Image (cartoon, rainbow, N blue to C red; front, side, top):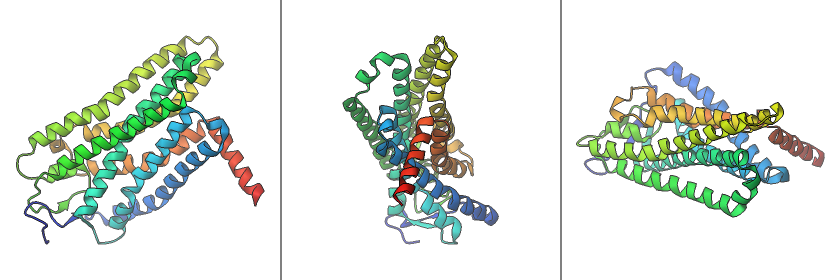
Length: 312
């Protein structure tokens, strides 16, 4: 392979599951089904949240941002996965790999922070209901979302830039389906312990700190729900939080197992399956979780469908 310089190859070869063609075919079919579902499901959440006046509240404003993030997250990796799984061509240019790294890291880190923001919204709604509209006004919501996006962008730029500066010494084969930071760290040569430590510390702030805020918020929410005397009130409060908790578990489970461990301890196939789960299955499941467990969203979707059919 031609090299840009002594350390960085012109192209990367993403090996994926080349040694198991039957698995590649199976995953290719799964992605062909789940990717359109993820795009369509999240687009529906965005549309109904914008068009239905009943959903013009802080929670659905944050959910709209979450759906947009999921669309960007899955789009940043699935097209490349389909190319790799559906053909013998496994190459991606160095520039393409860098762009994928930036977008995937940006969307993933922003989602970490946004899930913490959603838990704070639920905390205020249940624990401070009389002050909810005062605390979560439009200006505050826009400011909080802007901070979340800025934090995700800052993290991605610092993490990926640090990773791309590591010498690869001409090694252009990555045992993965996509370009991802832990795999590039593992493939780097020379002294990389300082870089691994730096990225691990930054990951703690972007993953562990939001998770601690989520757990603290739901500890307070749990106490508040238990103090509600009516069973109907407890059921309603639990219903507004259960969907978010399921999404948090789906998102943080693979994230913690992937990013909060030393890159040298990551097994061969772990990054591949985690990328599939984190970047494909979670964005596909999120719209169904929020739709199936939320009467307001189901009602908004029904109203939108009726208006579309009546106009035709």
